[in-house]
Amino acid sequence: MDYSIEDVENSSSSTSTQTEKTNQAPQRVEAGSVTKRLQTELMQLMMSPSPGVSAFPDDGNLLQWTGTISGPDGTFYESLTFKLSFSFPSNYPYSPPTVLFTTPMFHPNVDMAGRICLDILKDKWSAVYNVQSILLSLQSLLGEPNNKSPLNGQAAELWDKNPTEYKRLLMLRHREADE
Amino acid sequence: MPTPQPFVQDVSVASPELTSFNEAQRLAEMEKLSSDYTPEYTGPLVGDLKSSRELAHEYVGADPIYVTKTSAMYPAYTHYRKIRGDGNCAWRAIAFGYFELLLRSNSVDVVNRERARLRSLGNLLKAADIRDYLYEDFATDTDSVFQVISTSILEEDPNAASALLTQFNEASDSSVAYLKMLTSAWMKSRPGDYEAYLETSVLEYCSIFIEPFGVELDHVGVKAFIDCLVIPADFRVEISYLDRSPGSEMNIHHFESGENPYAPTLRLLYRPGHYDIIYKAEDLSELVPFLDKPQASLVQVSFMPHLPDQFFESTPLNFFLQPVNSVANTTTTSIRTNDDRDRFRASLFQYPPFQPSPLPFQTSIFRNSAYNPSHYQSENFQPELYQPELTDVSSRGGHGSRRRV
Image (tube, rainbow over all chains, first blue to last red; front, side, top):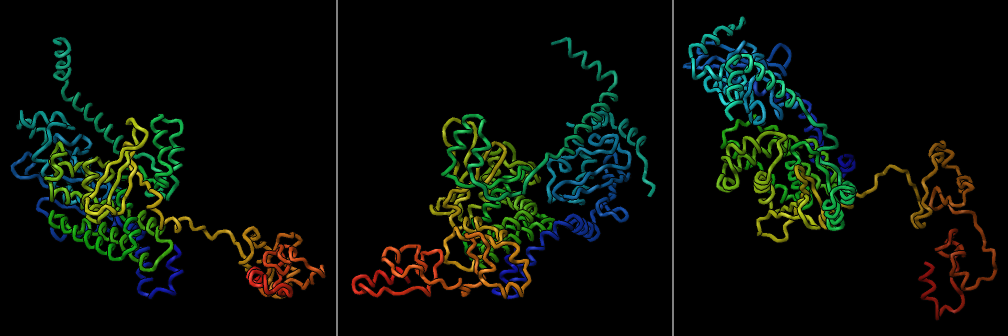
């Protein structure tokens, strides 16, 4: 785009600097858009925290976060806390982060490796979702599982049929995080 | 079938934990495979303008219906523009076509009007309770495309078309993300217009087909996007369907407000699962000179613009390699090579050595021929040899002088 150079003589200095700005802006945004977005999200989480959820980047890596969810009252998960890991892809927020439960979990939509089946982390992901909305969705998933397409069939079956056994197996697996 | 059923039940009863565990493992593995899969995309997000005859080449040897339809495209549609097939093609094609029509309007007023309209559409996002930090970067990048267009129009930039292409390719993902949000908010603000075409609610439809990035847009989505972005700008949209339906020409679907029959038209080519932009010759009447402008790559120098084209030779490289002084002192003859076709003169005022006409007597045929050095069509044209006719001035002077000047 050599036209900005060619036209310098003819155009006023203000328009030519405008042209330069607009030419450079997207490249700069492109390079740092992930970190800029994550920094903004972090600030939002700190400024207006939601009760029962939190998240913070791991040491020196903005693309890797650890999140915490408290089990909602009135569910099997009441008074338990769960840790999660967030890995953000380089094209975040066009693609969702990979979210795993790092605390051992017993839930119909979470498998033994901590992998989660949640539509907004897969095909329903869109750029309007963010760390906070993921945490809140997961928190509500703890109380309202989707038992129709379970990752953990046993948990899905026990959820309605045998709450006592469900709670026993949950507590058997659960390890409270050290930190 | 009474026999298989107990058998299936037997297995699940025997080891429900093992089955569900294996099933979960298998599902998780399959899910990982599918989520890690990314098809290989090639080419730019929005490609350069190409002749539509290339499309016909692509389909040589394909189904005869395709061959007939693609070869019938030219000359009705002279050009096309390839859009990368990454699931966002409909978004990119319509958005780029929209921006291109804005540039072609060549009116800063129109651009500013649209820029303001899109900004105010952003209020739909506020109304939908989406936090502004989630979309303001996308909005800024989209706005930068408007900025480039209005700057190009103001400065009458001859490279405006390529400046727009560059800018759009840089800001394309952001623009698509932003336009997705706007379209979703648009649909939710007038669900009655779309609900009848959907099997689910507008809310559910948007969350599956509009909002996620890289999801193919179906017909309802295309209509909503066009309703939101293109129609209010007083543009029309034509989608030509290149498929195996019978007929020798493509079926065309029109989207228009119907208020302005002369509205500029954005033309899309739809092949099942993919959108590209196509152009008629009249669509490009003003843009083509920009695009066809030759690149200043080959050094072609001539200081004698009145010579016929075939005498334009690129300046020999060793001419530029000579020290400046020697160039200044070089006489016309020393620059001249043995090659008789080399007509280079360092200056218009460096005449070849004076050569008196070898023939003392000139017939009028010779005088008016290209062999006469005083004739302007002569290879060795030398104006100083020009001598006005002395005889027969009264009858032929007018013609003669006009011919010779």
